[in-house]
Image (cartoon, rainbow, N blue to C red; front, side):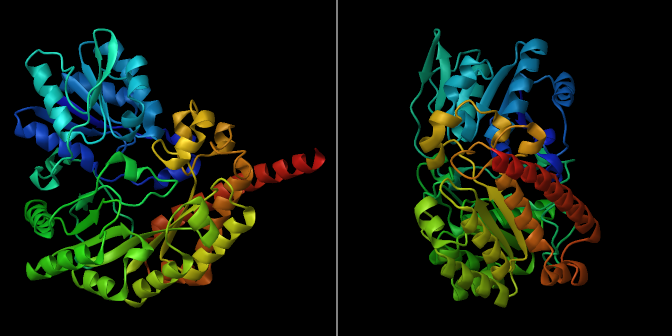
Amino acid sequence: MKVLLVNPSLNRKRLGSYWRFTTAVPPTGLTYLGAVLEQDGFEVKVYDQHAVHATNDDLMDIMELYRPDIVGFSCLTFVMETVEDAARLIRQKFPKVKILAGNIHATYFPRELLENGIADYVIREEGEEAILAICREIREDRDPVAVNGTTVWDNGEIRHNPTPAMIDLDQLPYPAWHMLDGYSYVPDPLNLAPLQSKAQPLAIQASRGCPFACTFCSQDTMYKRVRIRSPESVVNEMEYVHKRYGTTVFGFIDAIFPLSPKQGHAFADEMIRRGMHKKVVWFTETRVDLVNYDLLKHLKESGLRFIQYGIESGDDEVLSKLMRKKAGVNQARLALKWTRDLGILSFGLFVVGMPGESRDQILKTIQFAKELDPDIVKFNVAIPFPGSELWERYKHRVDGQPSYKYSGWYNANINDGDNILAGDTLPSRELMYLQRRAMFEFYTQPKVMHRYFVDGLVPMGVLAEGFYVMMSELLGSVFPYARHQVNAIAA
């Protein structure tokens, strides 16, 4: 029996120029599912539609050649426009194919996916055990109506089966990376280390879940309990992947890694004991309040070259009251200082436009980003992602908004529609202007331009394209914002 697992593409027309920087990364979740199915004798193909910027017509061509019995879609909210169109085409051209939907959008909207004919079976939360059980039942010509962790049709009624126990991560097979042969994935364009080779950078997962509950994030609700793999298990996998695929760069896809100094030191000890720190480098994302100088020093010794911090804001009131971040600006100052002193590259992630956040507080965040001086920054507009506290608070008003709006870089000028939270934060045009202005102000600082143009942190071609996109987006937001201001004054 054949199974096709699809990583859907973005509708790049909705994003404007910044679609060029929606970097494709290997879809780890699908390779985990593929590995579980392959172990049980299924023939599995992963189609990364996003990585090749393909259309649904291309997907139909793939299906014509591969002839799958089952198609599974990874459903994030902002790609649902693509998924809905693909499901419609599959129903027309391949009516016998069963459609599965999983990931966070499917977890929160299982009824809608079934009622709208987008999926035959919906997998909520973790997918490895559920997809295997569904495919086994279909293989045996039985209707999989009683699989735990799924929502299905049962005699004309929608049936929500109970959620199973959490999966033991150490018992999962390694991701089936061979299913991505032929795809080209490019890491963030940084010279991470002399060890970097032509081999694809690959993802590694040391935990699932997040113990924090930031209001704008839904990661803590996708997995109901935090589970941590042993450091031996993680390094075993890195060693295996390095030997089999020649991989020299790994990126942790955990919500946070390390989750504690204890976990971080144990992992670093294992990497050094096994000599893996001489063979590979790695990068990760964590919180500014979970690191200290000694931990960062040890992690660097084990191969850490690049770290992403969720800094979010330069205003303590926004952090504590609007985001419930439980980390302050002084902790960010310390973390970035230690990171810079140790020569670790840094990426500062910021969120602007929280409901209740003022224009002055956003300007304060822009200034704070310039003060911290990470090597890379990104400013996302706050979005009420399904499962987050923002969603729960505003779903009465945002429910039914087009799925393509669920992006921190949604372009209201192109789509002629307001940001999702418009009215509860600043007007869309002003917020877009401030977001683009933040990027422009940071990246045109002399010290940043020196770092990029003189020190060669980023290849010249990437710089040229980035500058063009940044200018076009800034100019594209200035004029609509100016018109909005004039109209407001006239009114």
